[in-house]
Image 1 (cartoon, rainbow, N blue to C red):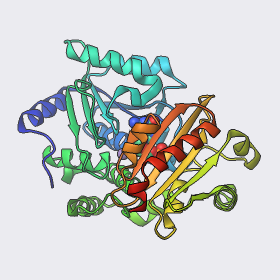
Image 2: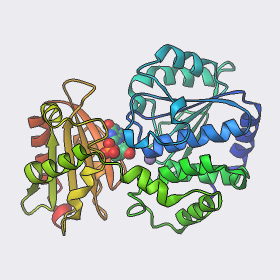
Image 3: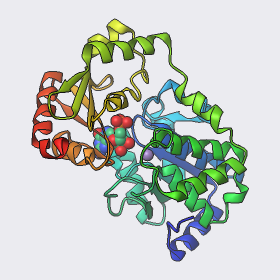
Image 4: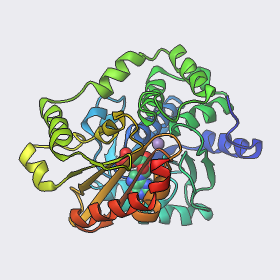
Length: 353
Ligand code: 5GP
Ligand code: MN
């Protein structure tokens, strides 16, 4: 296992956990398997230690994660802002998971910034970041455990628990959440998962009694007939392979969503599919934001060394990981497509190489 915090930080963290009564875990907007896995995993751990713990997420999360242990206790900030603000203001320990800056929580940005300011004084809750995104915002949390080379925030948590001597005490519930995050952020260990220590973590989680095959089915074999039809439509009608560039693109408007009866979460993972085309290096899924009118979301996936986080940062007001990134812009879908074409053209040397 790897050392993710210094001995000094470990000492402080241990003390803060011991002393905490009220704990809150938060994560980024549109929580994915890793965001929920890390917050729910920590929440189950904190509860095992006798703490009151709540998970607050900015907005809705995909249906295929609704089976996760503890999911019914999640508080959605877009629905219960006042309750969540009170919880966050009165927490004595706040875990900030799978996000590197308060802006990644969109509507929760201001309360997190407030917590951050208060945490620097005596009154506020102690904030701990556990994350694996590049460029953590300096001074966001009291302890920032940022490990960009790790496959998932859930892996980071595994190492934190190891350093705290908690790994052998992990419950099936906790281990199930942690495994889910590692599995979803690596496409079931098909990318970003070459480090052997990833499998040391998995070995430990298996010893805790997780059923990894069932977790896989719970997450990946949950399509509705409608989602299968959406996949068919996107691949047959909408997928465009950009000639000579080893890049592809799919788009979805809200009108199409309506026409096809697309539910939130139905589009999840479809962006990966064009990478199954031989030689394909970059795939983009560009869609109208369902929650923020006038905004377009970009979702990018790549293979090998193509840096889609860099492309997202330069062109799409976003970021992420080398092989999986995203962004968000206020523009029309047509403008977004043009911008993507421009970005592909700009990166042609890397894409063709
Ligand atoms: P997805 O395509 O699954 O929405 O996002 C893939 C990854 O890209 C996420 O795990 C996250 O790291 C990053 N990402 C997605 N959207 C944004 C965004 O708007 N801003 C930034 N900085 N990163 C994003
Ligand atoms: Mn993650």
